[in-house]
Image (cartoon, rainbow, N blue to C red; front, side, top):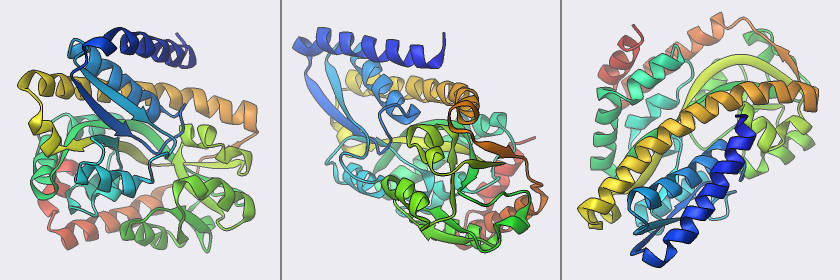
Length: 329
């Protein structure tokens, strides 16, 4: 089944389950995400809601808000910590503002392959990161979504090597480490909030950005930037997080349903994002006229290794960095 058809079927099924279970619901929880409705994170948030209702026998409902309706990624994470909303799908870099342990998962070229990312997030390392983060922040990591490949998109420049990044204004988010990364590549990092990136590309405020193919299509960045460089600098990790205190207030049965739903939704998202990577790469070429280049990544990887080492040293995470590197073998 094509992913687009599957998304439609999953959405329709979610509505049926929601309607059928409404009368029996005892608890209503909320998840909010920043991504557009058709983005895999939004689709997976709805799948999480469907699974919670199914696994709780209709006793727990989860309402879903997407498209940044309730705020930016930092605002949604703050709302989860405060207990204003129950769940969000966040990014390790934004989460690192509260406790640095997640930040290493966001760093470019930290994962050698998809298998490497899955070994880290589904094993003892991922569990250890979750335990540390909850203890320091009160925010529980319920599962690790992600799996999409991140590449660079530009309006005019063609990136064939690190030299072509010199002086380019490249969009990033609110995290000093990513600003340092762009600096290590010779580019100028420019902080632009997610909903404003399209306009920033269109008006020349930035020369480019980096993200997943799904974002290039669903957020329509490819309408105003037709050059994609296959830097493959990141395999994404997107934690599904919740307010630990709110989870503790649930009954054992309801909490177990939420945790199992989170684990299943995380695997659902990883599979969905990998399929969408393939579909959206083809769509970028056929529908948007995007031109792909495959750059020499040698110098980019070397520069990124230095950023990883410096981040680990600054935050006392040398052992974690070493364990993640060893998991690639």
